[in-house]
Image (cartoon, rainbow, N blue to C red):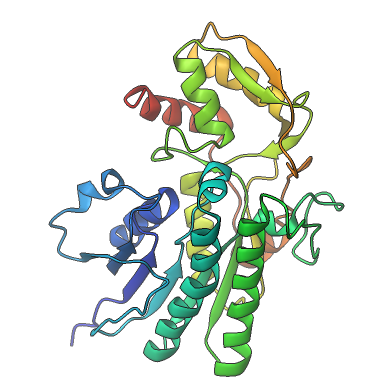
Amino acid sequence: MKKPQPTSVVTGAAGFLGSHLTDLLLARGYKVIGIDNFVTGTVDNISHLGGHPRFKFIQQDVSEFIFLNEPVDYVWHFASPASPVDYLELPIQTLKVGSLGTHKALGLARHKQARFLLASTSEIYGDPLVHPQTEDYWGNVNPIGPRGCYDEAKRFAEAMTMAYHREHKVETRIVRIFNTYGPRMRLHDGRVVPSFISQALKHKPVTVFGKGRQTRSFCYVSDLIEGIYRLMMSRYGSPMNIGNPSEMTVLEFAREIIRATNSRSRIIFKPLPQDDPRQRRPDITRARKILRWDPKVRLTEGLARTVEYFRGKV
């Protein structure tokens, strides 16, 4: 007798990460039910899946009750605005999807006896006082600052996820995602990769905040999604960092983008935004040990693919 295909629900399926996850799941034989309300996601990210026999799409706000008739094996909760531009414009929606949306997605997982994965973030560490950041670090977050709506929404989502695990015995996974880049990022989402690339492709000045000494580490999207998939399929229930531990300053990264785009842009400096993290680098010891995962795509290769994507958008 043929074994039925496992079914995954992906919230935020039309977003940057959600759409890449959906592609990977379909490639590995899953049925996928994608949910998105297009607040920050876009039809373009999933238009290639139109007519796919194992993909179904529901346009819905996940902060409202999720009703599905069919069995569900996995729930991947990726719905959330995820860039400073988005959550500064949509602070209440950001808080609602992190709280009510997580509650509804966990309720679905509980009802269907499905395994649940929360897409959390390195932002739960805030402006870290520990470097690199390990999963045991509790963070240094300003709850009432402009970034608090996102940081605290994700911190609450982690607490809610663990409460469902302890109280209702839901099988849960929590991934803390560090800076990720690749095709399908929005051109004007305010994050450093699309901002720098779009400025460089137009030969406009590349804007660096502060003196550019703050550090970031950039993971290519295919590496990240593979790590997240392995986490869901593992038996590990505590939070896990997934990201690239190769760290560089924002100023170094700006120069890298100018090289990758063959741009005539020069670099200009503007004041640092409030609560902008000074350092960001994941300790991925757990991912290496438990998931046998390590990022594979080099920055030069990943940037070449990403720049190619943005050339068609600028």
